[in-house]
Image 1 (spheres, rainbow, N blue to C red):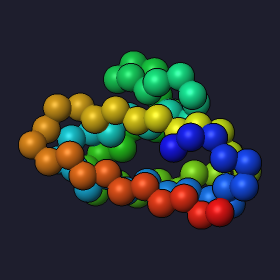
Image 2: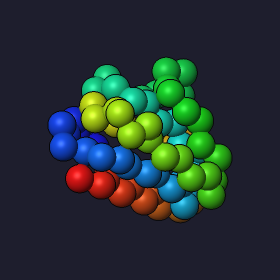
Image 3: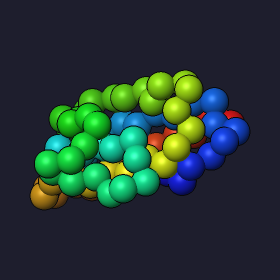
Length: 72
């Protein structure tokens, strides 16, 4: 997600079969630099006060479904 000053909240669901590395930063997430490491089927709610960029990267896997919801 891009930074969005009107964001009231956001959530991320890792529906993939891989680990998702999520970073609350405009700098790209990596497998060594991340905010949260999400296992398959994990759900994460972004803190309501955070309206900056959110980046993510998946570890290798067969299914690459990640659902992101932004509330404005």
